Amino acid sequence: MWHGEGSVDWELIIRDMIARSTGSAPTEPGVYRMPCGNCYVDFFLAADGTERWLVPGDENNYTRDTVAIARHGDHPWERMYTLAHAAAEIRRRATAENTPVEDLLQELAAIAAAENAAEDEEIARLARERPTDSEEISLADLAQKFGIDLDEL
Image (cartoon, rainbow, N blue to C red; front, side):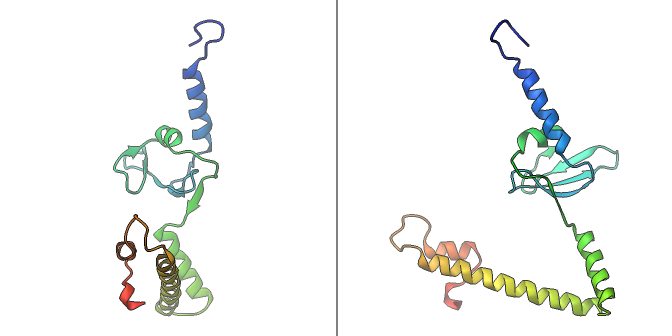
């Protein structure tokens, strides 16, 4: 409310911010990367038709408004693939390449394993280069946190 000259109507400002934020929020259910660029939300319609917005690792059940005001940033909302989309794409690709789905899955698994191994090696390299006199987490604890056995490297 305006309470005189120079006063600010904070309620109006907040309502305008919510309206702008909710206006850019997704309207089609799915999994999305949020505008902060780091968080994800699973937007779906419950059996009773109400919108549900779930953030992984967060036990709260959000609404469009609460997501809009609590989760913000400069990036646009980005729709992510769901497992159903991935399964449909694998079937489409197997059909297009005239390849059994099992063979395509083995090929994709090998690619993922190679990428994971390269990432593990990079993490191990960074951990090895870390100064030994650091007062932070020990090298062994850091490696263990990422599931890396330094003896295997």
